[in-house]
Length: 468
Image (tube, rainbow, N blue to C red; front, side):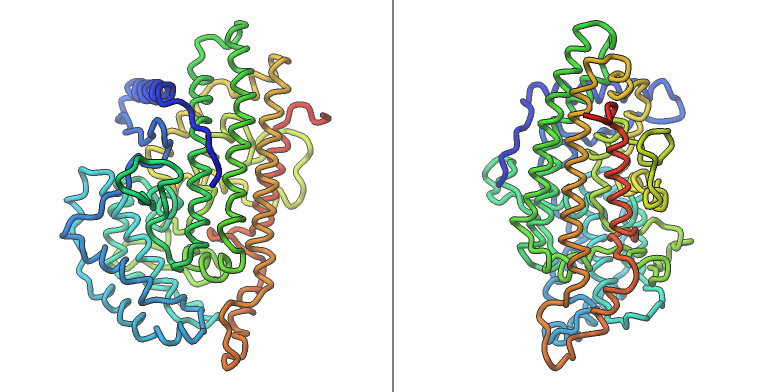
């Protein structure tokens, strides 16, 4: 387990209080918008300080269905003997989902933690339902999500201001419990509560992301220090910014170490064939893949239904805003974007904000209003350029290593065969061929290699001195 250095509770409490005060003040000046409830913990960042509570008894049917799903279901594309043996149990589970009545969610409207739990439970149920249906690889018929799941999920999602599908929050931020409930929260005393595959590899994958979030908490303090500087031209302020930029390089390195910890806890083959397929979203198979339709929800084909992605981490977005990384290619920087950069989805990172809860998205919107970024200040004051560029280089290294992980866990694994093959199944060639058809896409439907290279290159263009 990596050792993650977190800022002192006193400092971060001060920062969080300042952040809350500034956001409230900003929104008081805009009569059209109410002050947001900032869901930002002073020590744990965007992860709640305590595990989410289970839903009240009148929603027990949802909790029971989620508890039963791992034992009753296998991936619909799985042709192993175990999967074939679960066909009846899976069909019965999905029939129970279709026969459930639509529960009234009014009771949840006053408790944001219960809303988050409801979103998590319903989103997991939707993915269990959609991804467990046995289908031929060439079947393009839309998948109909029953109204017992779709209607309450959309209602809860509207309350939270988050997409009505499995999100990064559901798999990482909200999906944890204490290993020992009698001990306080710590990276060593938390583990993922829900798993699709039941494997420790899946748990390791989620926990690597959770450790990255915790490693990034100190970044929020650095950003707040910068954002609230009363004067950005005096010597004392510039010295403070310089020291914080040096500190930021260490924070990014800690985040990098946390991301890389996935190599020790999650096997690539298990991840690609047994974990990743469960949380792929409606558009994960590209524009020609079968879409999901939400029964009882008007215009459900317009809903944002991509699956969870690391691109939905608010910490990573905040880092990009602070350093002024231009993912949209709106600024004239060198080197000139490559054809592949131009082909990638320029608005991907901004689109991923739809998959964050409203308070986290509003935090980023607040950062967007900063009149000056760290890069702007470094351009004006030469002594800041070296520590700024060192921080950018750290982020570039992080994205380089992220690309290597993607190659190892996704691109390379797409050329392998599924696990647990039985000779009688003729090696499940249909499943293998389907996995290899066309470009390898992320859970949100984007071409993985194009997207990650574009992010890495956008970071490189953020450097001020391109020659050191």
